[in-house]
Length: 258
Image (cartoon, rainbow, N blue to C red; front, side):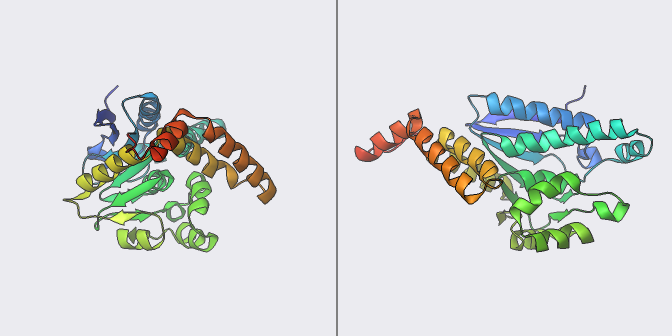
């Protein structure tokens, strides 16, 4: 199998790279599988503290490839369901990953590509980057990403983006709250790496994992349930090695080394 996805670690930052530039990194079954495999490896890798999802070539990810779209027309319901769940599992792996996942977007991030960027914890893009949940324009639905998008923006904004299928530039994505920063293409990699290094040095891995777990969980709880859950997680956090280390360093006026 060709290396559609590459993985390497540099100074505690794990880089997962889409490596199908000749197809604008379009999503295929094999590429999605290799992304899933790489994410599992990165989450388990003790040398990796922060994950960066990026791509080779001019586009981040142009969505599903032509062969995939043609196959949809002859698939049975069961085959389409299995394939949909395959993509769903990729989004779940990113969203529930105990480590921070940063999307580094250059060029187009359309349909499934926008989905990948949306589900990451942070997203940096270039002024030339474009985004769009364009599925309705070909009679399809942005079903899986919708679940994550409505957690990120208002329902009104989600309707605007999902029902029109509009393609919009990075400055609009920033305005909509979909990305964190617009950076020149020349500075993108350096900026993302600097931010990742900052997270490596300044944050506890145990705390980050717990906060991400809580953010995913509390949104589906009632206020009362959420508060009880939060109190329980608060108590659990106090017993972690990182919390004990952090408090000791604070009390002793020592610089914490994460």
